[in-house]
Each structure stands twice: as structure tokens, then as C-alpha cells.
Image (cartoon, rainbow, N blue to C red; front, side, top):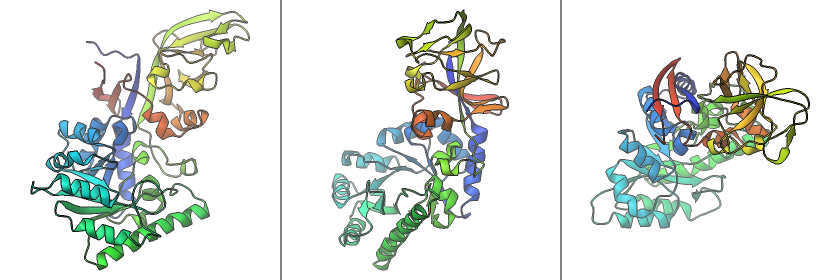
Length: 391
């Protein structure tokens, strides 16, 4: 089948390499780099991104669940993989066999994993999750006298091998004084608990705290490993950090012009008649809609790039297509490439701009680009690989 370029995402592997080396430069030379490739590598394609991270020198990979880990193993990716979310204890032996590490967030869960491995002679490598203020998964690292003893009990379990211990910063991406103080408090809670355990003979190969913002702003908290996520993909962790570091986005979302027609004044466009032409207009139909991951809430709000010029979305975005006003781009023609976000020559539309228009964050916008949209992996202008989920 010929390659169909209706709507697609260009993924710059050059920029992935650049971001990786920038993040590496922020941390000590002996600190390990864990590449976070959960959620299909934040919408960028987990397998191609993971392969590139392996080539770049990443030490670990992290996913959200067992299915994502299996996907990487089936693609012959052999780096250690840490599952950051819950995996039913039934899969404990499979995780051992595949070299997968599992986060452990409670004594009860640890007991279930240990029991699932009874009689096998196998040990599952685990990373203990401490809650230092995120209030999500984990053992309380503060205001709970039971935590140290529970962690010591887990360390003594026959079939579990505590390889690592970690926490997650909740406001490291904020530059506010109170939030900076809270991040410092989280780190202090974490290190105090680790010292307590080490004092009783429980030691860990890997202690890790830093997400993207932590890696960029708090390299002194790097410890044994960092876990940058969104920054690896070239996006700042928050608005407060935009432009502060030379992060380069990997993804540009593109589509094509299906038809262009002239319209008279007072013509209603698309469902709901939410847009009416104010005068003579040229309207182009684009081959992208909310079924491709383009939020319907961008209707009559966003602009895209055509021949380096901004063209506004008019009318409601449909399931498979949308309309833009190309009156100011007389050279526009059927088949032309339109950039939804990313670069077009010297012009660009940051994904952050679209995220703000929809009241969300770039993480969600990137993860919403769905499996109907193929990914083209580029080395400069040279296409290295194509990921097509459907055909």
C-alpha cells in the first residue's frame, strides 16, 4: 500500500537527541537517566522513541502498566523497565522473567507480590514509592510511624529485591517561593526516610526524585537517577519555565487541504451555524477532525499554518475534517500541507498555544493525537521510519 499522507505527525529524532543531551548536562556524570515512555511516549510512539533512547545511552525506561512494558519487550528493547503504576500480583513471575521492575506502594501489595512468587525461587526487583507530598500512590514518608517498619518488612521478603526507592515532586515546575520550599520539604522527607532505612541496614542501588522540572531546576536532588518526561519531548514542564531552557519539540502535527471554495457573505459554515462569512471568503476543508485528536473546543478559536501564514479555524470542527479561512493566502491549493502545531519554515505554532486555548496542558494535547494518525520519524529532513497503527 502506498503511504497515505492525509493527516500525520512528524517526529524529529534530532530534537530528541538534543533534549537528551541537554538534560544529561544538568546532572552528575554518574547519575542514571530513566526515559519515561509511558502513554505511547507521550503520544510520540513508544517503540521508536525507546530505541532512540537506547542508542543515546539511557539506562532505564519507565512505563505506566504491564501492557506498555510487554510492548517494549516484544520489540526487543532490553533496557530495565520500571512500571510506575499498579500491576496485579498475578503477573509477578512474568515481570521477573521479562526483567521488569515494579513500583510497590503498600505493605499489602508487597505481600501479594511475594506470595505470588512463592515456590518459584525467583525474586522480583521493586522500587518502593514514598509519598512525600504528592498524595497519590505510596508509603507516607511523614506523619506515619509505621512506614519505616513496613519498609523493613518488605526488604526482608524472600521473593522481593528492593532495587530502588523513589518519590515524585508535585510543584517542582513552579518558581514560586512557597512551592520551591515545598519541593525542598519533599526532598528532605525523602532523604530522611532513606537515612532511617539505611541506618537499619536497608540499602538501595537507586534513589530517584527528579521529574522534568526537578532535573532542570534541582540538579542537586538528582541522587542516583532522574526521570525526565515531558522535557525529553521538548516541552517545558510549565508556563513558568517556557523559554528558560533550550528544549526543542519533537512533534509537528500536519494535515492536508481537501477542497477550497469561494463563499459569498452571510453563508453559515459547519454544524450549528456557529460561523457566518462576514464578506467574500475562501474556505478550505482540512483532512483532520476530533477523531484524529483535534479538540472540538478549538472551533472558531485556533489558527494553523499554511505557507507560513496563520489561517483561522472557522465553524465547528467535525469528526474527520475542519475548515479554515484561506482568503489571505491566495496561493493555497488542494493538497497543500497545513501545520496544526509545530514549525512551517520560519513560522511556528507551539503546542502550548493550542493547549492554553483548550484550558489544558501540552501533555494532554500530545497524548490526544490518536492511533489514526501515523508518525513519521525524521533525521533532519530524511525519513527514518514510519509508525502506522492501523495499516
